[in-house]
Image (tube, rainbow, N blue to C red):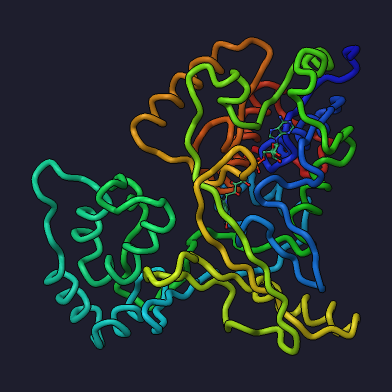
Length: 389
Ligand SMILES: Cc1cc2nc3c(=O)[nH]c(=O)nc-3n(C[C@H](O)[C@H](O)[C@H](O)COP(=O)(O)OP(=O)(O)OC[C@H]3O[C@@H](n4cnc5c(N)ncnc54)[C@H](O)[C@@H]3O)c2cc1C
């Protein structure tokens, strides 16, 4: 392929689309390759029956970085959300993340002091030299909260007993002695008003985008199309698995249409926390934008909802890699690939698959913005978003 572009981007998820947006704002010619038939990667959504269905599980955009928020708001309208999932355990429901409601439901305690005293009495110090998910959970959360909300959910999520999972998975998990049940504490939280794939489409405005196009069909030919290239696909695939395959956990979804109601389960997300079902979450996406769904459905003479039931499974060749398996062997392998990537001239690497990290959308966007700033320079003042600091 002749060198007709300034930048080649492999992958039309948020990492690739953010870099592409920045390159276009800088006046560069951009070619984007996407192996699937749709935009948005893991965040992709599709409007069905007036409802934006997030195809790979519920996606709530939340951010505090001013540049990320400015970019998001200048390229999409957002419906404000306030995510607070519900835990279902042995037929009873509990407020998440664990807070004073949860402790009142579990123990009947009424005040923060009573809750603290009960929690303290349930904490079990980890045995010397032991730091797995279970030992940390019993210490950090206390036995009841660990058993009710975290234990079985995590074992289903990762397909392993909690004694074989790293304690570090609980690093960002805490309990609150207040009735604050907001899952995210960022200053901005919402879902794109017309879905993630439409948002990514706007980020890619002005780029040449080729869907159903696998970079590995002709790596040398595509690489020749531009002097600067960004790869956002799986890093082990890029290097022909020379250090072995990186481990991932995947998800399977079963979708159900329910006629006659737009409110079937009463909330957007229910976490299935006991061992009686392999499901981890049931999502009713209509709850992310109830007014929008109502208006669209009434205009089309519809009254229905969609439930998405989510089951974790081992990743295979034909399954979407969702969560990196962060055991010691995979971490070491990922380091080898990172070193290989750093030594590869003419190529940049960004996003969750290339970095082999679990990243939220705001982190992915920020990572691509910073990478673009470093390699493409500051945005011209004519940029539609104005100055990204
Ligand atoms: C179940 C689940 C729920 C989540 N919920 C949230 C949430 O609520 N909030 C939040 O902030 N984050 C959430 N995330 C994280 C979010 O999905 C990611 O941060 C984000 O989508 C990653 O974007 P990316 O561009 O790095 O990767 P991806 O979206 O995976 O994009 C990579 C793209 O590259 C393409 N590609 C790969 N190989 C090739 C090739 N050879 N040729 C061409 N194209 C290729 C892929 O098809 C894909 O489109 C969630 C993640 C999971 C697993």
